Length: 107
Image (tube, rainbow, N blue to C red; front, side, top):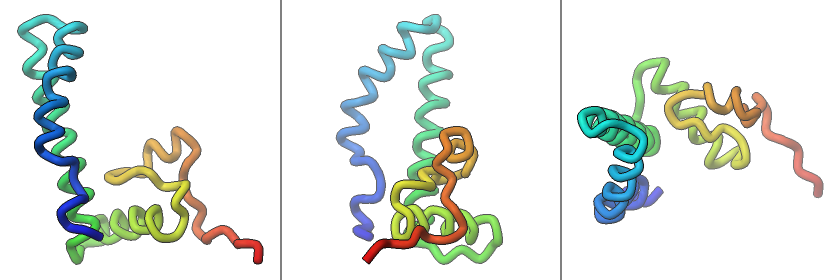
């Protein structure tokens, strides 16, 4: 719950921008590269902001309350399921959707 460590470090992001820019440039035209790279960066920033929000905010709306419950379940109840931060879509696709009850532990 360290509020300084919930997002990817900006310095590392800046360093990684160069290889990702070149990767996008490798597969697209020069005129399309900025749009795809910018869209990818915007998507990543929105993901990071959502992750930070789910850890630190006190949601009042049903959608964000459910997202927070879903995400915190991944951290504190069933750590090997529920990897989706902003949606459960990929958990459905990859079979990592958590059950409604925590697994029983053998004692």
